Length: 436
Image 1: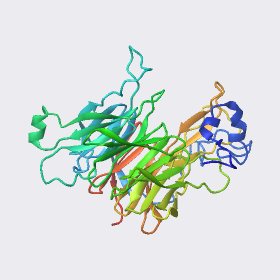
Image 2: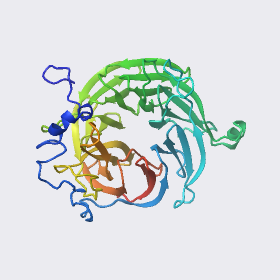
Image 3: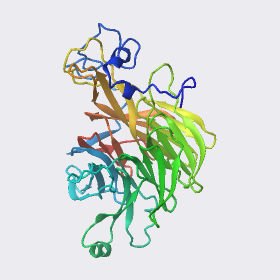
Image 4: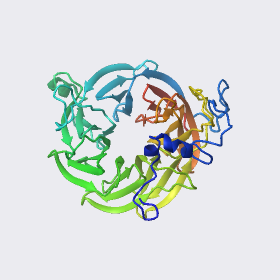
């Protein structure tokens, strides 16, 4: 992804690290600001101390429970059980039971395997590790006999495969444990540790497990042999998103600069490369945060730094739709010190989920402003909204409102009645009210 033949990128995240970039970044016509003389302490569109205006879309659910859990990054319903869900926080997986909806109960928690050894490991301190993504196998519905069910977690330098046991005989044979990590699939060693940002199973038999790495590579392992099958190189920057088509023929990967590559998964060959377009003159590097297949020929992409969802035809490589997200009035906290210009929040999306014909997306809303005590500006997460679109009509259907920070993960229950979301500070359970 180049500009005028140059390999250099205008990367806002890197540019923000120095005070030299602030006058341009926050100046007139920039992404963040307006001309000096605006309200320097504005707490949002309505200012501090005022209630948010009426939202432009109806609420399509109500919050029925809230669970405080620091560092909660991923949430996922157990696909064959409407009353169980998993939460990944740090390098630990927590399991909650929803027998009492208003008071979910934690039933167990398990710590994942540590990352493989690295030459830079400190002899006295364990290496940092965290779970960045969680994915279930896709063939869980084939439950004609008692068997374990599998899910995988994307972590630092490796993917960990877990099993979930439901039959009492299997639980007894496992020493009474309902779930446990089974084995680790290591990525190629690099000079530094690299996180794997996304993981997915490849339908229809879930033989292949795919991981997206910060070393610009997509790794594919064979679950039965536990060996690496492919190391797919083609991205120019970190890979942040993965999705496999329902027939298992196509794997899509998205990078930190808006590249989307389609791969022939059985053969390990690149089929097509696409780029996320950013309209107008906005200086944004469109990081692909999540990918989702809608049937075999439609791919949906969420961008962390731009408030729109892109829908592609994977057969032709053409963009079919752009689902715009209307601005929802928010009551933002006031700035901690005086800033000589108005700070305007930025928006994007971090996560996607499907519920029937509806697409649900979690918003990433934030603002940046100069720090008088450092050359690095402050980047602060702000109250964010969950948006719902009807893909049959292509129109926004409603919102879920209430998170105090950027939403990091969402998941829909197998029966489509409930939605879980987390902003890294707490987990919220919503009862959905979507037109059928």
